[in-house]
Image (cartoon, rainbow, N blue to C red; front, side):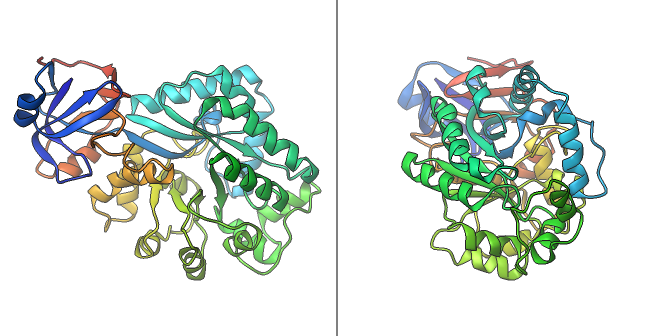
Length: 406
């Protein structure tokens, strides 16, 4: 099939006006000028008219478990208060509620043009009951703060539950909720299975305060649980993590909202740098200190975007995340913001050249948007609402209100 559009944004070459993509089976066979490809390949041509064709969007950090919590938790006074509110809500839900929540989240993410998602779940055993509509990396989110002796059993059980999904990884939650033993065991399993790892790190100023002095709301919350997993040591959360666990490009570090310049330098000096997943609207919801985007960019980190969860976000739109990113960091060109949810996300998942781009040999994951205005990339980011045309693995999954010519 040849798919023609007003403009094709491939991220492998400059945008192609009157461009096209040839899809054979589930993969892309060629990208280029429509008339050249029509001459060389022939066959059926699907004309998307004046729409712009681009890669499907990649959500690098999401918690679909919490889709059912949309609007339930107002912005809290502290991050620790938000954790308490989450725990109170979770006490009311059964396994079937989480399955429904995850399914609803998948459906919403897909409507907004997400074709790949990194989903963290606290219930890895529920994954087998869910048929996901988008390409999904399932990460088992693991917390052993109440029982560090369970680290081995917990990590092994999560891996066993998720292996049937093929695309999976492990997510020791954070240095203040996951023991060094748990991080070590997750690293061992990831090396053995060639899996990806992710964790929450330096998410809030409260974590910084706790790490340095064992004071503040988050430290108080942990003390109220009667646990002593996280010892104050006068260093930052990033420094603590680097002492506890060797990091590499196998890791996606979520948030990094509360960091010092020295933290970024230390991460940049690693043999291979971990990837950074930033969640702009969740960052705004919590009122975190400014995200050090420019410092991460200057140090050549691979920066991706995620939506986090609907316990701190109104919806699962990555286009809205890009708009919020540029609102807070106006020096970022719209084209670079779009790279953060395409090629950068693919790189973080070990799929460079296969996802997040339109290129020969890549998966046939793409979306089409009606775009107006003189600036192509600004027009893409201005689009709001459900994406009208979506293809995943060479199959059209959404074809809303279209009048395409063949």
